[in-house]
Picture 1 (cartoon, rainbow, N blue to C red):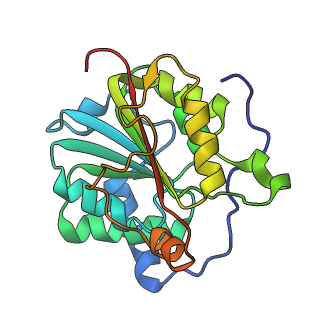
Picture 2 (picture 1 turned 90 degrees about the vertical axis):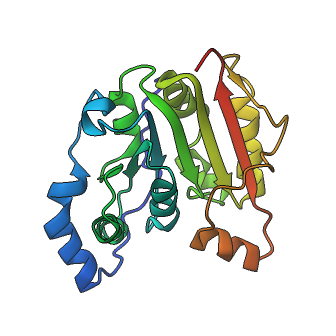
Length: 224
């Protein structure tokens, strides 16, 4: 990475965990959770899958679990630092009997730095914290150094898919990704043709507050 981040892109708020979420972490993390550093070979983790996608910051996992259930041929790794969301997703994985979704509770910067080059087929980053105050912009996750690290871990043909309801942040990410010659934007702008991503609570809140939903999808050049 060009420069190691000195600040976190998240705050570990004292969110209340339900009894069910707490039990799910205690009972199911050993079954569906990963430890850091993650395994270097996704095919060993998901032997029945042909593609491997990492979602950064899945919140409570409502979109994550739906996408995984609809795409059983793809192995998904969900990253989240907030324990209530981890518990919620673990409970859903167990309830639905999913074998193509694992959870890792760890800082995304550390995880991406530890990944082998060209080892993933995609990243999903849905509604990352926009840190709207200008003095907090340095905390934004999707800045050029981190994007560069993510791109290095993508296979040729892999995608980087971002959704946000914060216009200025979206413009910043779109411009930054456009500076990487190894990436191409098949939409030549916002990815308005994407229809398979389920709505999340953050998206619904953004729409209620009349903020436009911006989607960005870039592909890494080269044969998939």
